[in-house]
Image (cartoon, rainbow, N blue to C red; front, side):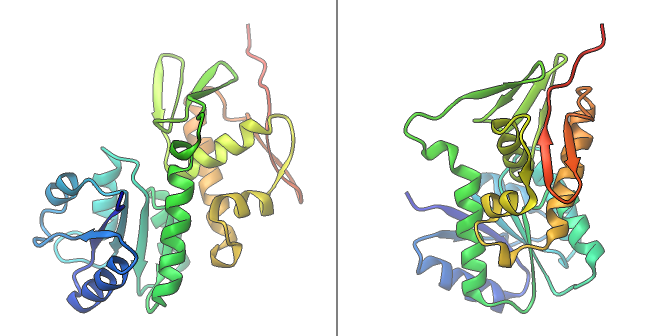
Length: 233
């Protein structure tokens, strides 16, 4: 099956170049014609991945990322000519999965796309996929990227989901930052170390709604560990 990529890029030269390059790798590619309405073509196309420019007409890429995240956990890779660290932090906090600065080499973008798709949909490719993990009185739904507990359901981004899954599968054991980066992004040369910190912080904030703010422990100089939390009675 050809995987579908939705490109939100108002520079027609960049869009057409990316479209041509990605189609050579058997991806289906589409993008919006009207940048005041991204959501209609997005939902109609139903892509497996979104490439999102930040500087766009009408509303910026951060706005459209929030709109997409309101209804989908599809992986989002941001493109931008900006190089300020806060733009990268904001992109990840908004639910982005990766950030590439312009100008970029198309082969680097392709490598990031392939790595993102592998980690985002890896569980769907297992011969006998697990449906869920149990942890600290919660259920981690491996098919829907949500964690359920206390009569509520919290959606996780793809990165948050993989970080939590990796830590819980190694429960009460330290997982090094390097191991997490290698498992998440396949090739750590493409990763800003701050990206992992931002994702762990964001994950902890979501877990706090379930009373699990202390369930992911930082082991200074070593990594992170998912621990068993004793409930107060």
